[in-house]
Length: 193
Image (cartoon, rainbow, N blue to C red; front, side, top):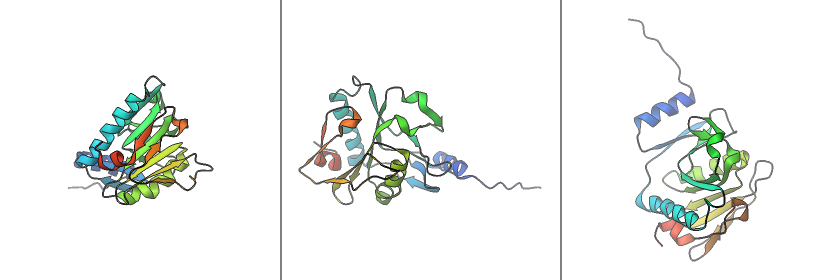
């Protein structure tokens, strides 16, 4: 019996892992395959609260959509993509489909990641990847260090030093996103208001 061997591409390996690990988030960041476990309750509540906050702020009337878990095609390395926890995108974002349910970075106005067990990806490679992709605003809800970081306005593929917000403070959503909104740090971190 002949056995054919085929070396998988990173994209093929990601597809296999996605099918084998339902509920896990599989991404390719800087040519490295990453797998994130399903979110815990506080993580999920934070995302639900973001949907309510952006809805209440009139994001849809401003021509925006707010979505969870859609792919962001990254220009960093061939086959790189991420699946942000929460994004604010242009209303016609579906016209910018690249491949594998991933959309071109130019339709993303804001990306939010709520840290989980792989918090170092959100604080390291994703900062670099999102800056290189030109994502105007990247907010990290850093549950590991109990703070919220706002990266914005990348220049030459790099964000400047992030603004840091502690408990008891509010994070003003940058005007470039297209809605006026302040987000409670405590609610972002805990999922409860």
